View 1 (spheres, protein in one colour):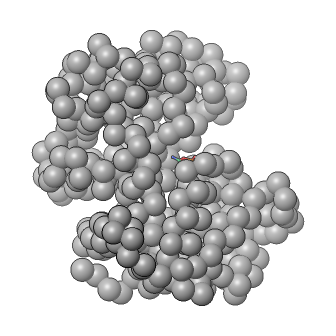
View 2 (view 1 turned 90 degrees about the horizontal axis):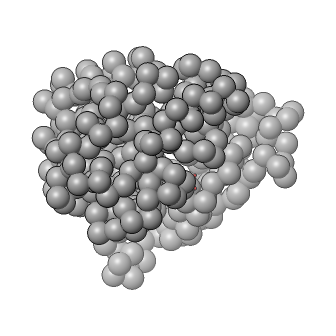
Length: 324
Ligand code: CP
């Protein structure tokens, strides 16, 4: 159990050691148990968290806000529509100023090429920990929740196969942050990671290389496939979700046209039957129902999506309690 995490930023799990991440899971389980038993756990009494949202959110906002209250503190919702964070206020100013008001600064900024840069600039100027609530590159709290869910469902993740796959969605060009953070962390914990995507939907090359290296060090494996059905074969866990073809084009119309070629990349019962019988279906949500995944699968017995969403609360509380 690591006890030296006060003041640390959580921008990507790659910057935390395995033993530090294990401490997060240990504390998350303890806090989950305490909440289930109705045991007060006000570890952050009188502390407050600034939550800067440049993009909309349901789960992230709700779970950070509820989490801070349960820890005895307060979370302030600061969005780009009603404040000056997206015009005028610079990243450096926000780090300096909000770091003097609050005990932690959490940020969601997903603009392609800018989000991670913004969060790092705030962190550089801030005297308090900065927590990444999703950027263009990483979504660490989602993936910590996903790992906790996998541990709860299958036990030791080593040697289990997870298929991180592109799926079609018509809504909008989503960030690469979920699949990128997934391949990094799952490979770190010794899983056999499959990344399945059409040629236009590749992830950032340096992230893929880091995932490959993580797998090599952990005794797991990493492979890339281009066939949707093949990704499901024999998998213990499947995580098919939509993301944008950012490395191919940033143009909305062009990306919609490219995505349109893959409308049949939908998770349905036939695909699930290719995986192991007890294979878990995961999705960070929101999902484009009956476009990315059928109701039958997402509402079916193999779906872990509600436990996965719940675990956002517990891992975030653990990181906040350890760092703030
Ligand atoms: N999974 C997730 O981050 O959900 P929100 O975008 O609703 O916060």
